[in-house]
Image 1 (tube, rainbow, N blue to C red):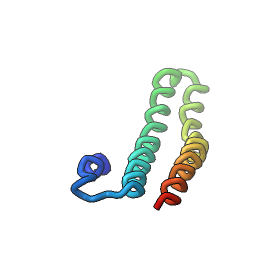
Image 2: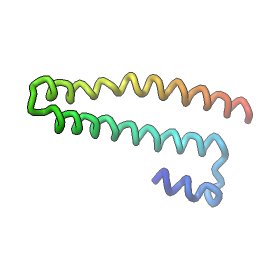
Image 3: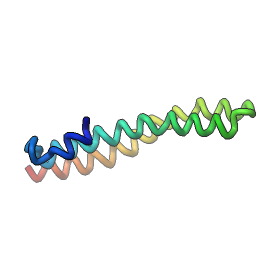
Image 4: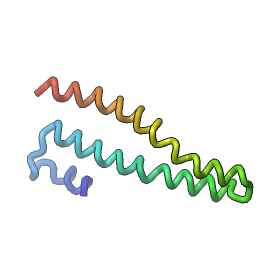
Length: 85
């Protein structure tokens, strides 16, 4: 849906801030899907060892770290965009 909105940005008359928010939402969904994929990969590669199974579960602890870093970066850009308008 977000990709469709980005494709139709002119038709939808999205301004720069709305386009930024759309990209941010799309990125957050990609991040939310990437961590489970990483967990499955770790489990597939190291799952035959107990440590691999444990580590694959702990990969979900990456969410707070990733979103803290990503959110801080996106907020800086968002503030710059909002100060222009």
